[in-house]
Figure 1: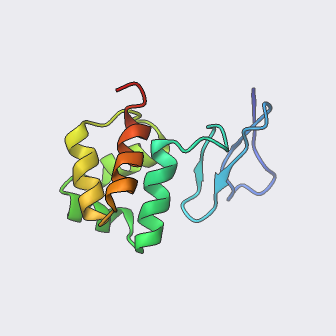
Figure 2: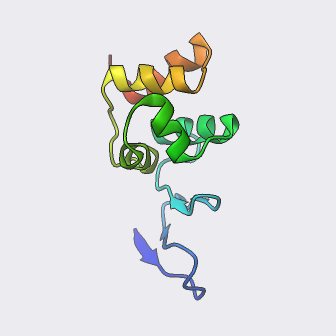
Length: 110
């Protein structure tokens, strides 16, 4: 895989090769996961956007740090503690089915 900087320096770097390019332009987050895969990071980011929350809003409601929310959404933290997943799901007022989906994305082999 190669990393390529676009000519416009305000745009983030994009991973090129393997068909993994996927930029979330609203947050400027570059995700190099499988576009068809529903990763924890992607599910969390989509749920937060749907709820109309900023990372700061969600952090306050879930009683975790803003840095943690950012790390979760970027995939730096790939397997958060089950209690963190529960706090996030509650803060986002997720349905039981969506909570299970989020938990399974965080812990796919449990």
